[in-house]
View 1 (cartoon, one colour):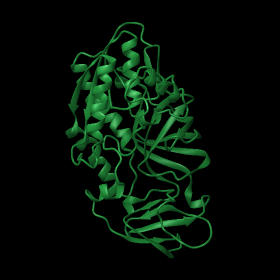
View 2 (cartoon, rainbow, N blue to C red):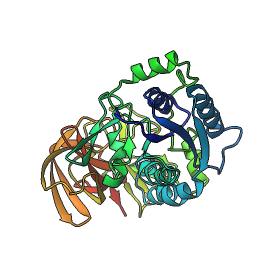
View 3 (cartoon, rainbow, N blue to C red):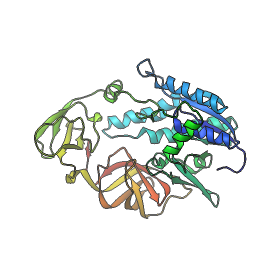
View 4 (tube, helix red, strand yellow):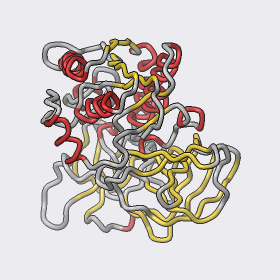
Length: 364
């Protein structure tokens, strides 16, 4: 909690978390205003009108809380910095995490720049993460609610961005947030949490992606090369995927274990514990760290996907922008394109984008 009155701009998304963030800060006596970010315009039509609905909810919340709200369009920045990368990664057979890039490029860059230009001291978001300042250094910490901790998605924040950001929900649990929203009679109190693509929302994923990338059906094969089914396009599948494969027959379920881009084959294996689904190490690039100095080589824990248990690992640098993580225990379905995020206890140190593992999952 801030001890002095600040000029704070809150990113109001139209969801319950950002609504309660604004409410709490206003109750604490800060000078608060909201910003609703409009970042997608391509097909926000009657069928997928989530952006319009969210903006109405954000305006209604601002009215009840008693703050002004601006609707700011960052669609050009989103398309250039986030969506272009999103398509590029899928085209290369990888599985990107747009939420990570949304935070780094839009919420804590475009939005932060806008808020500071408007005279804000800091911005606030509804992320479940914490921040501590020790000897002038801002540390990003896991949220207190382990089920909702979102530090994984914030790992690309730079020290100067962290210094200008606060996370009022970091010490709260989701149930408490919803109770507060109900007590304050906020219209978002029972609103379902958003899922789907960051700032684009929920829609049939295959049909959406097909608008932007050509599809090329091909064979599903075992590691030995035996055809066991057909796929509708490699970009629609991710490592460890079980649902939607449509492979019949007896025995254990089938899982995606790799992609051969050259032959347009999806490699599948039978059984959750098949050796090809486990990796002993990974290499990552596009490194980004939250502290002024990058972590020294040594022992840490990491997450290779959101909500997984921390995995003990060894960090070593291969060059200025590439590092290797060696796991104490093999990790399941480590996926190129996703992020590997390092932790020292509760401190989120940063991480990078997974390039490859010791099991070559993507063959070009």
